Image 1 (cartoon, rainbow, N blue to C red):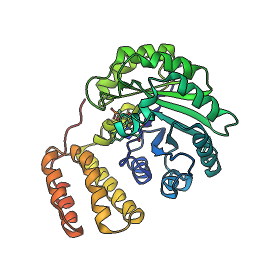
Image 2: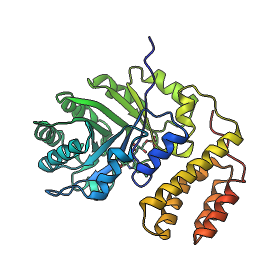
Image 3: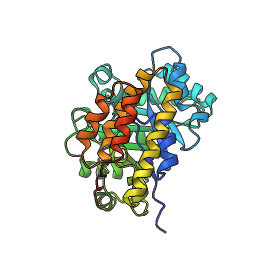
Image 4: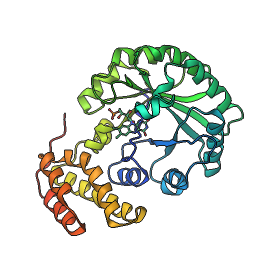
Length: 322
Ligand SMILES: Cc1cc2nc3c(=O)[nH]c(=O)nc-3n(C[C@H](O)[C@H](O)[C@H](O)COP(=O)(O)O)c2cc1C
């Protein structure tokens, strides 16, 4: 029997928050679950209420969401896992992939990849008496693309639900080619369900990836879905809707984001800023994304923003990649 295809929405801090996940699930579907953007833990301190609100079950009804933690401090980690369990979560993800120097240079995120012994010690301490299950999201390495080998050997010794690999090093950030050959080696080494992540952007490309990485348990998609929200459903076999239906769905998605943030954020300035961030990706749904971004960026108040959005949704749509 062919296993069902499982697609997961990747965490993208600032973008795939609770409002986004809810709107995406209601307008486009296709994802079986999501990992939320990381919550950075402050040593010895509880998580902030605003961060907890993002992953609270009542704000994540439309899509099963696993919170993600960024930390290298085992006692704080263990306390956060207990707190998330109290909130109602049964699974949490640990971030071993964040590449930003502010994070990595302090030995968190991808900064832990050159130190498999530290990873081992943190997992041993955090998972002792832990009420939730843990998955890990990592990169191939910090600078050395072969660090994953020892790291996965360490991960194999702990009871994890999934290992999610973004097939780049941290110094590559988000550009340059993904390394499918090494992803295949990681898949072969890993004894946990393996999730592939990186540059899934089209049905044709995805078909090729599935052949290169047979045995992959699930596929995590970030920018491909932010740019073309129809992609996950397409990968599951749904036909691409006609342009007028796509236009209506995109408009509904936009309106849900706008309405959601008007409730979550305080003041029209914050609302406009947040919507501008989203237009970096939403604009790619239109044939002339630069023009769209310029219109939205120039809108200085709510009335100008509404006019820019009305103008945008009268423009031709982009044709998604085959
Ligand atoms: C703006 C942005 C924010 C991100 N934030 C996170 C994050 O909070 N946690 C994480 O594990 N990865 C984060 N990532 C990485 C993505 O989850 C994903 O691994 C990466 O974008 C590669 O997948 P893609 O090619 O499908 O986008 C972020 C990526 C972007 C572009």
